[in-house]
Amino acid sequence: MQKYKVPDMTCGHCVQTIETTIKGLDPAATVACDLGHKEVTVATGIAADRVAAALADVGFESEILAR
Image 1: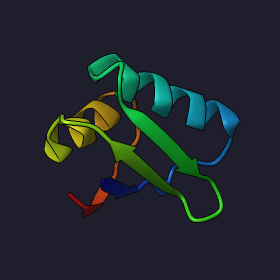
Image 2: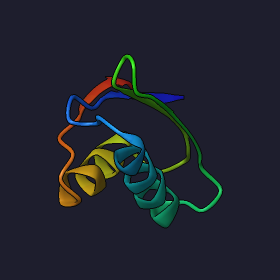
Image 3: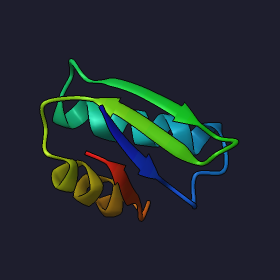
């Protein structure tokens, strides 16, 4: 289970963009966004660095909290 801190995630549109981006890398991924804590939890076989890079590509800098 991977976990990311995403400080710029502020609304439902952000959540949708993040989920769509991660599912674009791995359609079978499970993505859970917590707006209150600005954290995203992902279950995927894709490397955490690659997920973080994809998020950066769509404008969301992230900190990897758990790989």
